[in-house]
Amino acid sequence: MSTTAVIDTATPQDTVLVRHWKNTWIFGTLSVISLLVLALNAPVSRVVLGLSTKDDVIQLPALNLSTPTTGWAVTAVLIAVTLWCAKLTFSGKKTPLYLSAIFWFSFIFGVLIWAIGSARMTEISLITILTGAVALSVPMIFGSMGGLLCERSGIINIAIEGQLLFGAFSAVLVGSMTGNPWLGLIAAMIGGMLVSFLLATFSIKYLVDQTIVGVVVNVLVSGLTGFLYSRVLQQDAAHLNSAPRLPSFEIPVLSQIPVIGPVLFNQSVIVYLMYIVVGTIWFSLNKTRWGLRTRAVGEHPQAADTLGVNVNRLRFSNVMIAGAVAGMGGAFFTLVAVSSFNADMTAGQGYIALAALIFGRWKPLGALSASLLFGFSLQMQFILSGLGTDIPTELLAMLPYVVTILAVAGLVGRSRGPAAAGKAYTKG
Image (cartoon, rainbow, N blue to C red):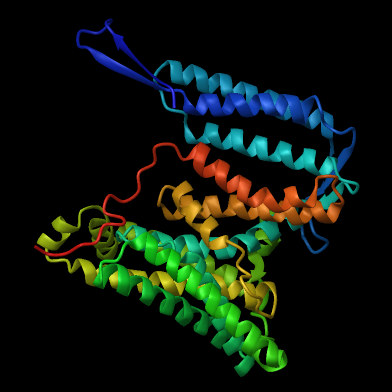
């Protein structure tokens, strides 16, 4: 990050004006990329984006967009925002959130149109893209919320991957044996808590390095579930690896809202549970005594202990709650996406959830937004494959992880997590 300090001598008192040029450099670089790729090298085609389903009360006309024209329009917006950002930075002002939102929305929209325009099929429903993106974000959202509860308490949760994976395994096993997906969901939460118990016990009670514990737990769960899958589930897949799915339903009235209605309010029940979990965590962290104590033990456990808070007990209970939350995300894989378990089927989404937590600056809504971004990139991988793009499948498979790396490495900046995260606490 380039920072320039200028002393303003026009005022009676010395004032230090600090200019942070990072956003301007990022915006400028992406504007150049947009000019070279989205505008100058846009495929000559038209993209048709459907905005309504046949069941919508209000039918919106489809967007029929020229790929080159859209590329130039998006580039113009990006350049304008970049210049505006540079002007604000030169004046010593921060880039407002709405300006960043305009930039990123425009850039993502431009990339979307360019990518679809490059495929052999250029007609698709925007609702299909967004609905799939929300659904694919669910495990990462639950995982990031579990990581949030741990890290705001001072415990680094590298074991999100293991919590998701064991939650998926527990869900399919119990769901298949009982024929009840709700019992499978409860089993997923218990499975996630079992993984959390290992994390909490070794990192809090025995003071083992939290990062090492998390990595070891992930390896343990991966090996254990892989062994049980090949030696148990595959031997009797009809009774042990064929769980019924959780129901999906639409919410009356809300589901009829154009575009966002079908996307947000015609989903699986686990998506609605995700709304409740995110809202509850946000409210609890910011508006309750428990949230105040949780933030205190994550920032300054000694001070919290002085005020009568049992630091390690609160940390242990929060890690267990985090396991239950992440386990619900694991249930998505075997009770919603598919009805069977496969070895390592989480495919690293626990690590992406951890990146979303960091990208979201350890805040519930920030982690939610970051998870949706990564879910969108994962959905684009499937969409572009289905449309017949000329982009190699290997590059498409890399897309979610490339987005994750760029987001965390290039956009987080000097974000600071909870001060006591990763530090064991002992009295005395």
